[in-house]
Length: 407
Image (tube, rainbow, N blue to C red):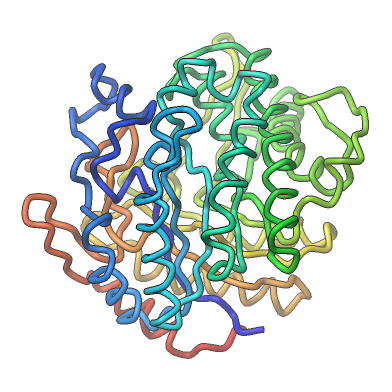
């Protein structure tokens, strides 16, 4: 099987004109730090053909993108055929260009009608999601082999229901765990819906993982904290979808065989690592001296090797569904790209089966709470003129992908 070299985007971050989801409401209530609006973003909705030529420039043979649920189902059970056809046109154009689509069905946003019903916390959320999936898969299945049901389900639960930074702005460990459990079943139902109509499809989630370390290895509390966060954040959700044992915090170890083996491969999103300390103010991240990107995240390419080696015993092929760095001046990204590919190659040489790498991101876009202030793109975007310019890192990735083979 040919190794997949690609980039990744998300509908709300690049399309523009998404007025019917919970993030649009979040923007309109002043929650974006920069005051930016996701409309028109990169206007990818109208400029996708031109943007696909950027993918060809990069010598890529794959592209991960998402469909926007709230465009297709603006009102409950009223599916917009024109919007479905729009995404079919995108898929057809990718196939014409010999670019393999990696299609994400849910990337953080929810239709407003569903958010008003309680969103991912609603016990019926898996049913609503499965209904949507069953409606769109027949239109897409002839063009899509690799599917992502849900992007970063643990991040969605943590930022929306534990830290309260994302919609719906709730701070509750109990409710976060409830949402996480709902997302397990939402993935299962979507997985089964895809397989029913496309048995040979390969289906996964895009799962964010970080390397967590104790701030001090001499502090036993910090050591326990780092191990606990690592277990809950990195492995509980993932392993539940492999063996059916519902791990804490989403369950108490009970088994549900219907969840078992609902991952055909592992989609891995990797960005950074964190050092954790438990003190008088609870647990917090300790920023140690290191090279950091514009987001303040440590630039740590070696971390992808460390995670890949830990995933090897799960016995699944692994696609890097996101990895990148916020770097407007493009001083870090060229070296980051070379280093992360080098560490992936090392893992591959040690027997880890990697099937693809999707760099985040093809172009600068709307970075959620940060608006347009954080630039992840291989292509710089002027959001006033919609002009795209390749950064030096685009040429680096073009060269890497042009070699085709991996390792």
